[in-house]
Length: 339
Ligand code: NAD
Ligand code: UDP
Image (tube, rainbow, N blue to C red; front, side, top):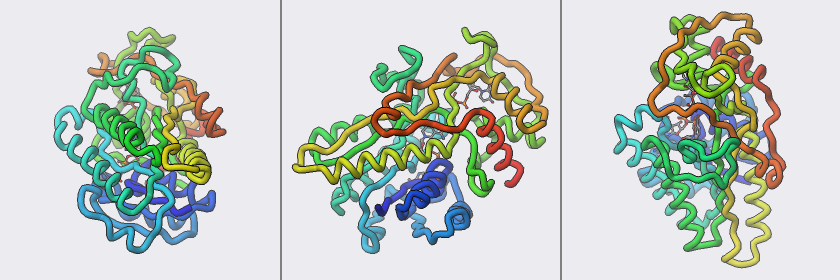
């Protein structure tokens, strides 16, 4: 299949490009490089040995020129701004970028008769989860920041779109906490400035770029008091998209009328939670490094425990995460030290 990847130069998009190519698909990438660089495209080529069609464009602008050279079977929509803290201080920037680019994308896909889309959503739509592990049915719409609201609103837009035109095939993927990097060390996560997320902070402390890790709270109701999350290796996450694409393809091929397209939502996580201290200890053990840390107060808006029930994706997509915490820590460090 020929797949349009929006935001394909980013962290998850680049790993997904590699897995799609490995699975025999071809990819075309649109990215405005607001949070990535053209080197990523070169490195996807190096890993896969395949030429990549890349367009440096903003999805909020007219990008129909891309369709003059390609006929797409499906689109995977990664593009968006994703920094939770920044979204609180710059909400309009987030609503503008994430919503307008999605609306423009849907219209453009429709104009070119491509009605198959996979959307990158997030566990953030569950807000403070009503149940653990979190199933797809868990109540939503209580987001704690503008970034989360953009994800929830886009899910709603896609759901309404499907109601109005059921010929669309739509898969919504709710990611838990992606970490790690491709084993080549050529692509990985490159946060600009001081990282907000735990794993890039740990790797930058290990490399000496940052002095010590600040652990946000050790008084949660967890075995060691630190927060628990469902970390997933980004390569596993990327493979989840290949599996979702298979379901999308099957649905669109079996579509006998205009009213039986697919609308499905899946959690992509491991189903296993690790605490901050478990992350630090495993990182130190696997890589033979020290990660100095200090315990501080809780971070505003944080929840204590968040991990997925990924069984729906296992049942329906025949996908499950394969990598464990040790590989996540090893590959994160391999990327950091190669940078
Ligand atoms: P990323 O920032 O590395 O990649 C996103 C890419 O989109 C970047 O390369 C950026 O330049 C591009 N982009 C942003 N706005 C654009 C626009 N208007 N037009 C064209 N390109 C644009 O982020 P990521 O970690 O790869 O995340 C991919 C998607 O997954 C995002 O939608 C994000 O919200 C979602 N997500 C990420 C995480 C995570 O922890 N990384 C968790 C849940 C969901
Ligand atoms: N965390 C931390 N120090 C940091 C960054 C994160 O202690 O510098 C903790 C955070 O409180 C949470 C976990 O690590 O319990 C994961 O945080 P992250 O921001 O990576 O993911 P999210 O909270 O968005 O799920």
